[in-house]
Length: 276
Image (cartoon, rainbow, N blue to C red; front, side):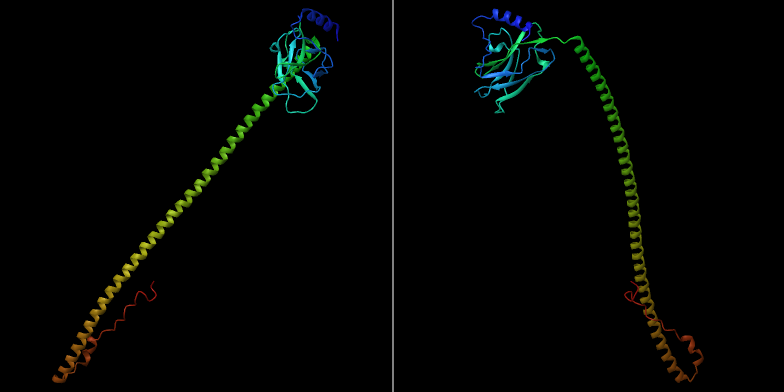
């Protein structure tokens, strides 16, 4: 233990009254702290090992840093809960340097406090000292380096974000072009469908008109055919009458016979006979 620690320890021991919590570093402690140094840097992590001597960690147990001369368990500087998820007898533990006390004139010790506020163990005293110039310079260099790294990373992230945005813009344009092309094809197909539908409708109308015309022609033909039969009957009757009169009158009317002869009109073909 350094001379500074010895001097400080004698000073604080003289100040502690009988009612104060005693500093007990004997081997009878239920919890001991191993690898505690005499001095730590102000930003240095305090790493140590908790050794359990016939003691089991309970809920509510905590490990705290006290300023030498403390009286009540609530006078801690900082504390952390003891780990309950292990059955090991030696447990690594640490306090981060960023949360350590900043008073460089005091001595400190680490104590194990049970859930019922009983001191189960205490470490040897230690001192928190300021960093020397070389360490400060090193930290400053590291800080500047970290700033530069952060700046470079930020620029890379910004550029990456821009690249992603540009890719998204290009992708959006491609999607819009594809949609426009598909829409154009759809419009073309839809237009052709409308044209074909109109053509089919027109053809149906034309076919229906042709059917109506054929029916009309057939009706007209039937009328002509009926008129032809009437004329033919009249002709036969007239011919018979002439024959009778010829016999009676003895006149020869053979030269005029061709005048009364008609060509036979064929029957009109039915619609069902191959037209449709």
